[in-house]
Image (cartoon, rainbow, N blue to C red; front, side):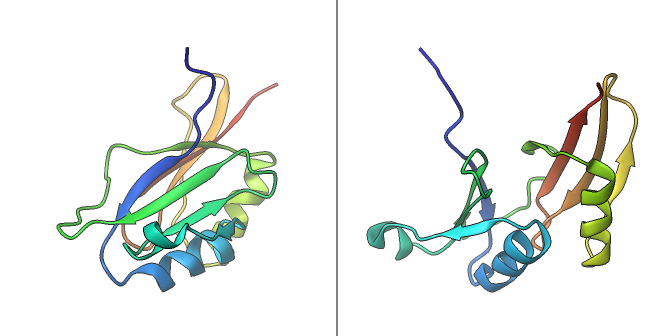
Length: 122
């Protein structure tokens, strides 16, 4: 029986770790988590939200193509303020009102992966 999503893995090109760290920690406000040594040798980075409820793994893919359609849907609180945080730090924010019962926007990480941020309406 499935009980939870442990993490979502996104791909990244070789050598992009510093860009990813700047975005996922500095822009999104996540914390980098140390990878086990055998996995760290493969490159990439792991990040999580402060409470550990959201985990994103960025793995190096030699023939990298950004995920333009497939994406994680990340729940946020105070979405207007979170969108402003991203914009203040230079990230593109595309607002979208097409999902009933939610506020949401889209963005991209520095290697072009599509990310969705949403907050349920009360």
